[in-house]
Length: 104
Image (cartoon, rainbow, N blue to C red; front, side, top):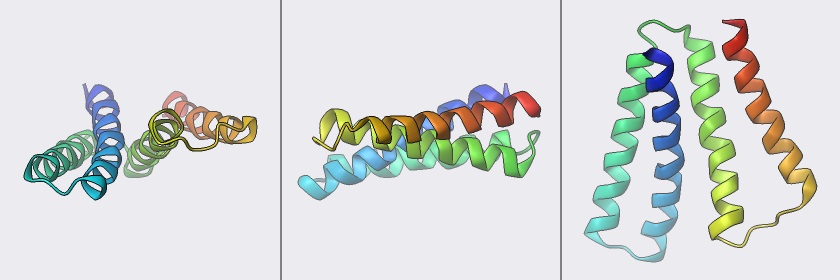
């Protein structure tokens, strides 16, 4: 269950980064509430996962999902570069996170 919580927390981290961008585009109460909500879920999921998973592994996977997801969201929704080298780097981040899980 801790791994599921960690992946959900990472996805919430990714959505939090997306909501920061949305809030910067349109400063509304709705965007601010969603931003706070998804980051709260993200930290709560990370805290829950760290009750049983090693801190270094949990944090690395959480940040890896957030970083790779944020880069993918930027490419999909914010017209950021889709250069093959960026995609390789994202794959390396995700591969590292998966390798940490397999070694745990």
